[in-house]
Length: 104
Image (tube, rainbow, N blue to C red; front, side, top):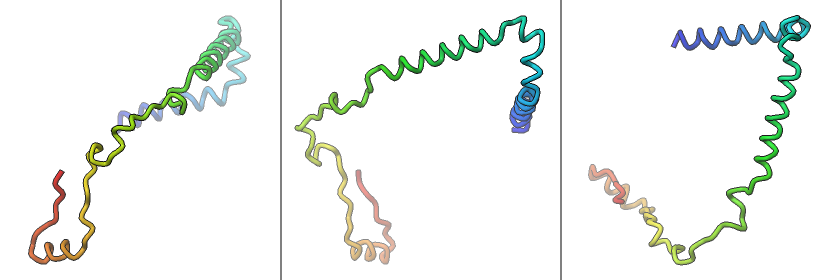
């Protein structure tokens, strides 16, 4: 657990350092030589294109596509369990030392 915390703390420290010195990093020669602005712009465009394509796809849960089988609407076919709500029998069972159970 301490190792995981140490790894997360190291990532947080690195991230904070990069955030603080972000302006100096952008002005550096290495940043310009690698053409990071162009790469970041193309990456942002790629992500935006992917996200916009996902929005165009049909929603899996459209109301128009839902089909309900009318034959399975009865409660007996859905395996519902009836619960005993009569408290007098439950109290009597507890007084006799019996614990009420539900048979499924």
